[in-house]
Structures are given as C-alpha cells and as structure tokens.
Image (cartoon, rainbow, N blue to C red; front, top):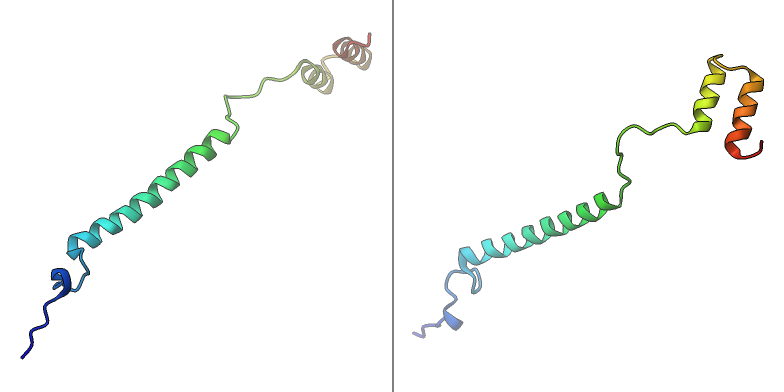
Length: 88
C-alpha cells in the first residue's frame, strides 16, 4: 500500500557512508593512532641520553687504575691524586 521512502536515500544499511565511508573512517582512526605513536616515539627518543661512544676515563680514574695495577706506588698515587684535586 504505502511505500516507505528511505530518508535521504539511505538504502544500503551503512548510514550515509556506504562501504567506502566506513573504510575511510577506519583509515582515519588507524592514521591517528600511528601519528600519535610516531609523535610519542620522537619525543621519547629525543629525551633519552645519547651514547656517543665509549666513555673516556678521567685523570683520577687513570691514576687509580695505575695504582691498582701496581704501576705506581702508594706515595706516588697519593701525590698525583692530590695534584689533580688541587690539594698539593
């Protein structure tokens, strides 16, 4: 008897988007998640301390190593250490 005309031509059951509309909407969500992830990764990697290679030993550490290996005696170690810290 009466034919019900779909409002605004919605006959596919997907709202007004159709198959492609939902695909683009999902693409938008995935794109936003990836974009937020990239921004998070960039900020985090920029804030980490960078390792620019092997750490160089300080003078006091070198003198302590030489004393530990027996290359210098206690008196020379103490004198060199005092010279390095400005006490002697």
